[in-house]
Amino acid sequence: MVDVGDTAADIDREYAVMRRRDPATHGKVTRSRNVNGNRWTVAGTGVMTRTIRHFVEDGYGVQEIIEQYPSLVPADITAAVEHERGLLSSAA
Image (cartoon, rainbow, N blue to C red):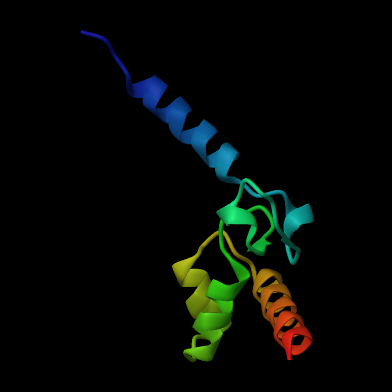
């Protein structure tokens, strides 16, 4: 029998480290050809800014959005909403 207890704990720790987001990406919006088809996305996540806009339009608050997307911080939501407002005003 192989004891995998330590291995499982090691994997859990490494997974937590890999999921940790660089604080330098907080509150930033970016897009990349290889992420979400070049759509505007909150940096360091896969969450599109238009998704956040839709949540806000549907009446969700910051904490409610973070419950749906735990990788986000309040600055991300503010940046995404401001970015989307800028896109909508430039399109008008």
